[in-house]
Amino acid sequence: MIIGKNKNKMKNNNNWKIQIAVLEQIVKQKGFTHQEIADKIEVKRQSVSRVFSLSFAPSLKLFNLICSAVGVNLFFEDKESKTDLNKAFEDAMIELGRRKESFKDN
Image (tube, rainbow, N blue to C red; front, side, top):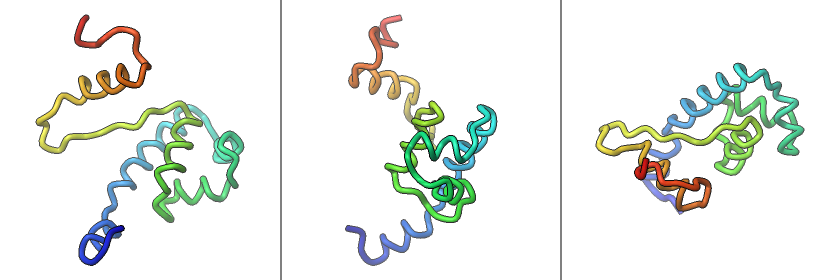
């Protein structure tokens, strides 16, 4: 549970809007409608539309469902550029059994 000052910091954190904005561009490029996404994840179209209008921060579950419906993986950005995000992604995929061969072995 987030309490005190930390709750206010999380409430004012708008990084989720960047993720939704990028996801919306991908949805447009792929030609999905809000209704098609809603049908795939079994929610009301209004719920999907509210996410893309930035009316509210979606739960991680809803965000993941929308990403899955349009065939998109989550991404990370290291603001300090101190990590190899490609390696981290590939290592995670190997750990989850989604890669047959290691990225680093190639």
